[in-house]
Length: 203
Image (cartoon, rainbow, N blue to C red; front, side, top):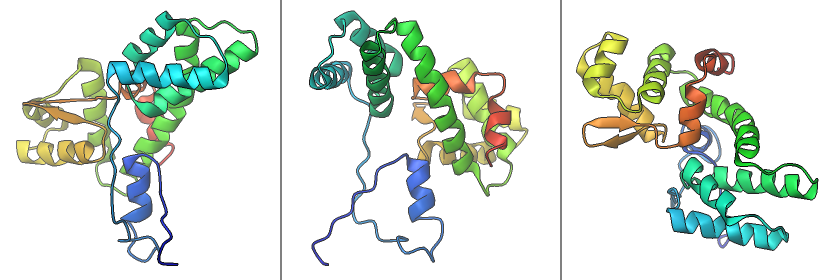
């Protein structure tokens, strides 16, 4: 079937575990094109939500849409989940305050995030180093190579290795000399007291 095209969608960690980890799996090495969907800008994110609500036939205040785009950072997956939660609440006659919706979204997203980070770290050595870096970055807003070196008590070159792994898998992003967590939902979940434990039980 030479004209068959298969499109696989998912997070970087989940797709890499499917396509790149095991050379004996049938899909190993067969990816011809990779499309990385970057976060939407504020205007596009608002348009995305507005169009979705219009298609569902629900009326959502523009202030709620604006607040959602500010809090979710334009990440399509979280915007889509926000849209589904909001639409369902409207249909069921429930409250649609931003705090209620974001609270439900964070609860559901946390389970996804724990699982995705566990999938990324599965089989890796020194899992605690990765978790400490993510936790520190979430708590402080950013980290440097020297800061990570102190946290894990390793040479800066080793710190760079761990940081680069997290960057390559979409958890961190490098901005000049700093590393940040671009996804606001990952930041929120990583600040939770039980973050490291929840990831470890899923390894």
